Length: 188
Image 1 (cartoon, rainbow, N blue to C red):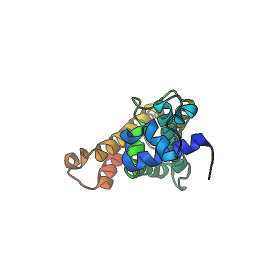
Image 2 (image 1 turned 90 degrees about the vertical axis):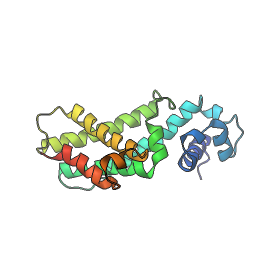
Image 3 (image 1 turned 30 degrees about the vertical axis):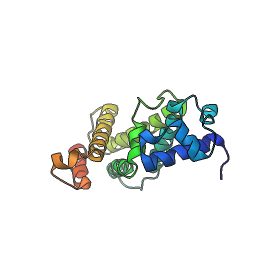
């Protein structure tokens, strides 16, 4: 087991986040979970926002790992797989997904968080650019196209998690709703 106190606090925060949600992640609660004094987190983090930024960074690191491990195939299929993995990540890790996009709770200037969140988007942009090189949406500016597709996926995930999309989409099947979204973007 890693005895790095900072990593122990992050792991404890992830455990609380996963089991109880974003609002349960307080410095006092994390200290109790980690088995340290209530002041210990402040020896390793400037406050709750920095601790939560480190937790969010771990979520972006996981997304980055998943996109780096895409199966081979044509570029458009790889992009499609990455889109599905993004939605799967959100649905399987709802509290982490929420935290990762909460600038009111996390210190978005924290260097590791900024580095990883940018790396995830750049990785997605590379997938979009490769799909375009293969003939999909040629002539469309890559960065705005990637941002638009990312926003559509994010919105689908967020609305689905909050329960607002199944009735609007007239479908209890998120896969069907994702297929419609992807078909809109990924058709030639």
